Image (cartoon, rainbow, N blue to C red; front, side, top):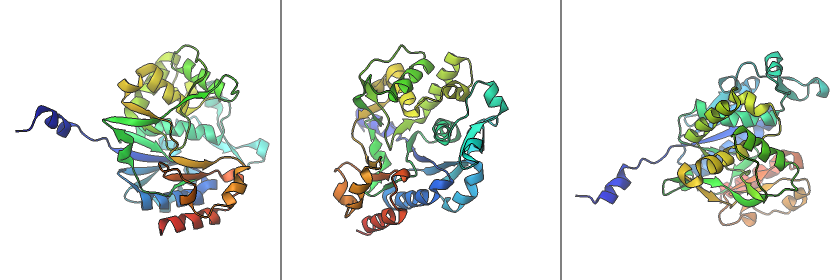
Length: 312
């Protein structure tokens, strides 16, 4: 006969995991490399979702497989919010707008706004318990088991204590907007930062978060969030998990380690040029590398370093 504690452990059902990647046509080759790295190094996920604009679906179609699905934007966002050529850029960029969006008070949105909204929306389109976001300009370079995100039934949440200060002009509106959307008091500084690569969310909390935003605002969640373009999806979720639910009650454990080594800025390019291998730049806990597309590193070099790592 099993002890009660042991029986309880056996009864506890392990969560299911998904990866999600918002992407677009300009990043399709980088996304292709990310997918190859997931297939080589990542385990314990049920599916990898690619979240793309409808017109870009054919460019990503060959990446689909038994554990990879494309979710077009039309399956995620309302039909009154549509991407259109941006006349200011002579059509080189896209803006998300429309008569019905403008009537709701939404300013024209950029691609990065649409990608953030897709991250919230994927919770309504998927069935997995935990969603780990992996941007298309990163790649995995070490084995990574998504089950390692769970610890005693709780799921990892990136949280950097005192990571946001009062003098951070870009971050403060993100924090203030998140607090307003959730019906919270003004944020205090310094405060925690939840923005990073490889951030994991609990699907049930995303759903209840969106419900709360709709109750607080009296509007649909897309309208409520996007009426002010200064929003951060990760801060909104982090505030909800910590300030509304409480991290312990939400089933999250905080971790300030960055699982992905990221090259963010143009001044990082020189350092990247000197890299002999990905292994040489990683901390023991890091499993991925992110190279922002705008720092000018050739994809061929990134691919060569990945192939060297994958064959080691």
